[in-house]
Structure formats: C-alpha cells, structure tokens
Image 1 (tube, rainbow, N blue to C red):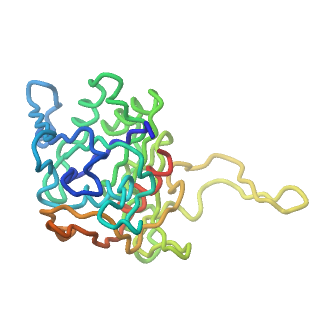
Image 2 (image 1 turned 180 degrees about the vertical axis):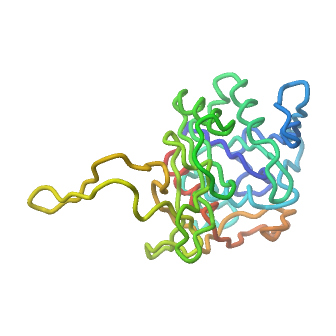
Length: 277
C-alpha cells in the first residue's frame, strides 16, 4: 500500500469495478507533439477525467485498461479472487497519450507528470508502447524524459516489443534499450519465450570466457550491451480488465464487466511494473 504506478498508455476505464478504487488521476492529453512540435503548456490540452460516474479515458482501444488491470485489479467482479493484478493494493495514475493504437503525446505525459507536486506520488511508470528497432540514442526525447524520471528514483518499465517472430535479432523496441529502464520480454506461463517477443543480439563483439570450477561464463571486451531485454514476464494469453468501450481489446460492458485475454509484451511489462510496486 502507498505505492503509485503511472500508466502511460491509451488511458484507463476507472468505471470498471476492479479498478475503480485505484485510479487516483486519469488524464487525457492532446499535444503538438503529434506534429513534432516541442510540447509545452501553450500547445497542450490537459483533460482530467476524474469526476463523475464515468471516468474513462480509454474510449478507443481498451489496451490501457487491460494493462492497468494486470498491475492493480482487485477482483471486485469476482469475489473468489480470480481477477487480482500483481499489486492489488497499488494506486494508479493513468495518462491517455493517443487514440486507438497510436501514441501522440508521450513526452508531453512525462513533462506533465514532472510538473506535478512530488510526481503525484508515482514510484513506477509502465510503458506498454513503442516503435520498431533503431540504434540507441541517449538524446532521443523519450530517453531524456525517462532518464529524468529514473534520476528521481522512479522505476521505468518498458515492453520489449512484438517483432521477434522467426527469432529476429535486433528487433527491440528502441525506447526499451536505455540502461536506466527495464526492458521486459514476453513469455508463456511454462517459462518459454513467446514467439512474438522481440530480441536483442545472440552474439556481440565480446569474448566468452569460462571461469571457476563451475565453468561459469563471463564476457570480456566491449559489448553492445543495451540490445537485449532485461527480464521476461508472462505475456501470452493474459486475462485482465477490459474497457466498457474498447475496440482493440473488445469491450466488457456493465453490469457484468469481466475480463478479456490478450497477448504481447504489453501484457508482460505491467507484470514487472506490478512486481516493482
């Protein structure tokens, strides 16, 4: 208790009973970042959706609500306890940063959070979004804002990406490559890499050397060390909360609400964010 997780995603449906008592801030952002204009308060519209009975910023996707449930659902809709998230006592700060499957205000969300007193109490930030692979650049605006959060003691967690079919190398989400974030691969519940989960490099330019009586392998020399996921978490066929107006993840309207299953490193990342919380 007392731990707050930021969810930068398509938003959260705080009207879902499993999340209703956990979403403390629910914000939708419209920003000039969409057209590559540096975002600031003069060109950003902040819509707090925190009052009234229908507190839903996840109207076009359902993705963010599913992610939020993996973190903090409290199984209100199933008293037998089958619908708990990893950290069911955590609080949530939800940022809706785009429409449907498109992210348009990511840096804006981080800037807005950095402007809030004590970061609104956020201790962990989950990011279940990304792009196709490109070389790591610490000057990338996303890398800059995640470094700023990390420097303030916040744990920043990213989905590793879903471009790993055929064991494709160097398929990582570029925003998950930074040394100060945790890159999460997706696995099955029987501890195998899911076929979609993005990969780093099988070989780099270091030399493997066996040391000690147990033959433990260490690597010496320069390494391309940022191009790999850090940990793996369940990401295949994960059941979680669904928005009352979702499309990518089908809706679960009242009064039954309920859950839907989805797969991806988007589902693996919040497992780690919840564990961190």
